[in-house]
Image (tube, rainbow, N blue to C red; front, top):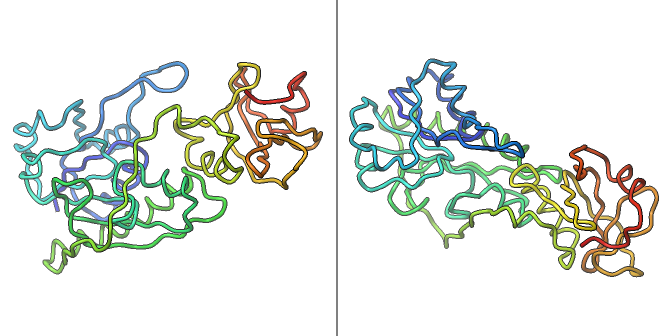
Length: 301
């Protein structure tokens, strides 16, 4: 089939690669514009763009895709597929033809833009992938196929994203096969929907009045983007990995626990171990090495 693909980040890139490997023709890729990223604000392409260009696929980038429906409608395609695109499509756009969305959750659970992060933040033991027909209401379309995916104890955002993307490839290609041969079924979603929210930079700040487990979940979900951090003496320390440690009742939340072998911070009724971090100088360090170089700090800010 001839497919118009809409998606931007690494998740979308993996899905696009799977579509091509299945032998479908992708007539164009629509993705977000190049934007500044990281500390140096270097202009960076969405992950899907260089891959598409390497495969010789035309790439269209729009700040507001709905302003270009007439232009897009001139492309010849059988259906369009979206995967982590990041823009809401208008009724006019949806009128261009059948739209199929790849959503990394078991809809109607976790509708919205951040289902992978939310599954980790909520310490869920499983999530999944849904292939659905696109409708104007967000993530509310009929289900074509679904598959459950277990979340391992050591999964973080990057590992879970990769796991879900690989499942998405197989599930989407089966859905496309069924659509092509006319055997696909479209089943209304069942159950009460739950919704995710957009993640902001400030959401990455650790809160030591919460439990250590809640903070570990935050590290797993957000350490890669937008980043997780706390401050000591006004200096920001970014956390890459953390774990729950044995509790110590002698300390109060935000206290740095005196232990030469581990970097421990007291939380609410629990203790957080900082396993690896990025120091204010930008150096990646394990928690113990950073603690050994820390002077005159009794508490985090």
